[in-house]
Image 1 (cartoon, rainbow, N blue to C red):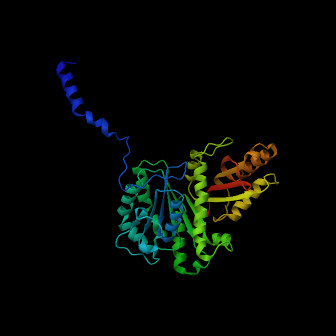
Image 2: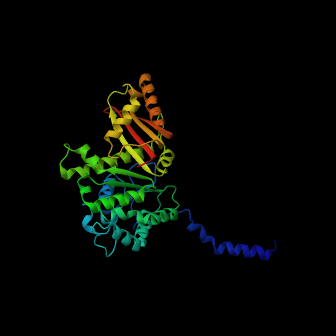
Image 3: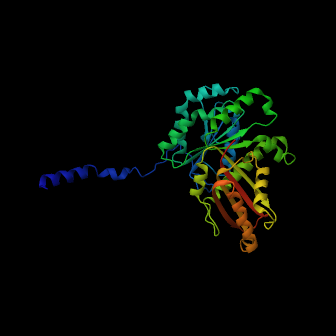
Length: 357
């Protein structure tokens, strides 16, 4: 190499020595980006609620510390109280859609860049996007019209996960309205081939009836479901001295298409015969989700026990048998066992994925 070449290289290096200060590995946070989640979670995730019902569900997650939460609506009249405007995205010049799902889809199609820009600006980098919507209104029922936009956003931030829908099915009384039936069916058909959790509002009301007044039913139902889902996210971020259900396990479960079932129960006597069947039946009976049908692609049993239970050989045998029971109802089995100091009993959380409707 001659001296002129060395001189030119040296000059070139000096001219561009500033490049190191702008590494593409450095993630910058815009002033409009929402704060990181404070709720513990094995997944880097965000929640986006569409319409009135979806917005109320989203607020339940926001209240638990999932700060990366957005409420997207076509009118500010349907927004829940107590939500800071930085979490709200209003579609311009819409003023509601009057339960017209076709109008909702048309408005979303015309304003897809508004939604995509809001996701990029406010959420930044995430891996998993949980989309919440109610099946009765025209805005929430139209949300899958934006599926390609949601996926494009995830691809742009190099997300490792995908879009998962959490939708609600109207009550029996609401289904007396043909328009609500049309909207609910439209949303259910739109999500059926995607990963989704279906919440049956009629089941929720039956579970809560007599425990709370009419005004408090939906807030309590939303809070209860959010706490259940948040508990799964939390446990996937926790090391267990017995058996860990980690974030990779959860990703495999949520990554399966079709319907996802979630349920939980408390068992007073962990030594009871046929513990697995009892847990499965009670989780199915007490869940706001329709019971599992057929064999799941994945089955997950999460058990939370006391240290006394963990040290009891007989209980350990019953727990192993319970996990095996779930394994017989899924192609792939996942499980986790966690220890707490004080519990009302054995706490079981059941998740089945890849289910038929």
